[in-house]
Length: 128
Image 1 (cartoon, rainbow, N blue to C red):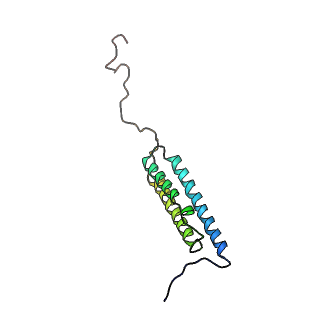
Image 2 (spheres, helix red, strand yellow):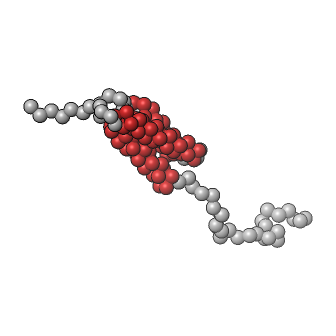
């Protein structure tokens, strides 16, 4: 009977688990920095507030603390899910910043309104 057994043991197991944990926490730190960056930019835009909510949800279920490196596959799953989470967070950040920009304040273009002199003003008092 062929069975696939995922286990973490041997001389390189502690180093592999430590590396997976480190990668997970670094990915969490990147996600948290992206959250702070998008939250700072979300003052004017509802879309960016939605992106902030997505980041908060990602941080709440981040593999850095929801996936174990000790039991199972030496943390390979933790590494992969952490990197995928950070990639997704980066994608959300790029979409929110690049495609849903807050309107910039630009110079007002001329409207073609005529400037009325005091002689042409119909609301002028007769003594002016």
